[in-house]
Length: 385
Image 1 (cartoon, rainbow, N blue to C red):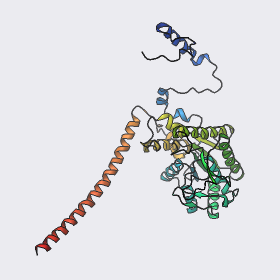
Image 2 (tube, rainbow, N blue to C red; image 1 turned 135 degrees about the vertical axis):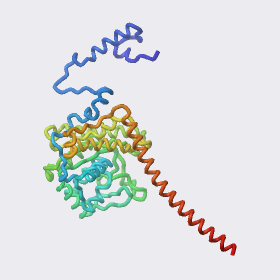
Image 3 (spheres, one colour; image 1 turned 90 degrees about the horizontal axis):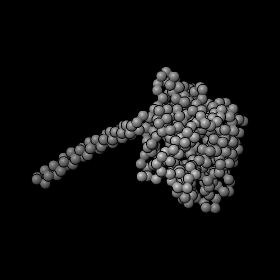
Image 4 (cartoon, rainbow, N blue to C red; image 1 turned 90 degrees about the vertical axis):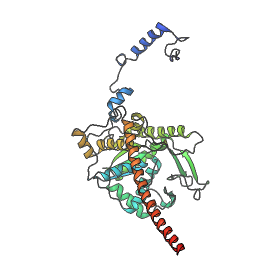
């Protein structure tokens, strides 16, 4: 018989009960947990069971976070900064008829992942003249120096000024920074740029994350009073940690800090929640609704997972997505086996793509063989002559 748990702490017994005594205790414990016996308060939402999550789908996660009206229409200007999910949102908008055009200087900046609150706040401070560009040392994801020129600053400022909606995808609370200037760095420095006297790693505290969010709010209120901001947290884990602990525990702490700080910031603005500030729970959707969201590298999401998240984002914040929902298009659900079927479909699509590549290369090989055979035949004829 398997070990029965809870007998000492919950029941207060000195030894594990058996038989009828155990069943009697279980019955009393079930009645004690009944919601009708406890004050439920003005607002109370019980954590759903697995069956309830399966039946309700993403609605069990989205409750309380959906605006009454869609924020984004085909004419809306949307700017997104943050982790790779920021790029996914913009790509979806561009693919689905939401015209998004950006100047070249802005594209140079926006294509880089800004994965923590400090570097996103830095973009606001820099765009509106609060940062000395000589104090900024930016290295892009291709390990190239990215200079904070006046042309780029004006482009970023203009993008903020013209935007109707800003999407910020937060990911980490781990950050590298310049000890001399106090400014955050976009990422760890390449070996040939790293200066141990200046460049240091730290985990941003809860308070530091809130402060960065407050900085964004201060600049928004002063310069961008009509701007709506959608915050979300990337479901993807960090690639590596510079802490001397396991990457799994470091990732858990990193996500908890940034998610908790964001919740603290939003709770302090109750009147502005779902009016100026919005939260899209992409992180919670992936981690509570799906059992196998990640590729074998355990970091990147399956394509079908990204599609599901983007579908929910569209239904929540875009006019066409909301229209489809009101016209009877069913919200995404995850019945038994749907993940397996989607994964099989994704693998079949990739296999078909690879088969196409193989077929093309086989044609090249066969053509090369034909040419070689012709050359060999020519050589043999020349030798025979």
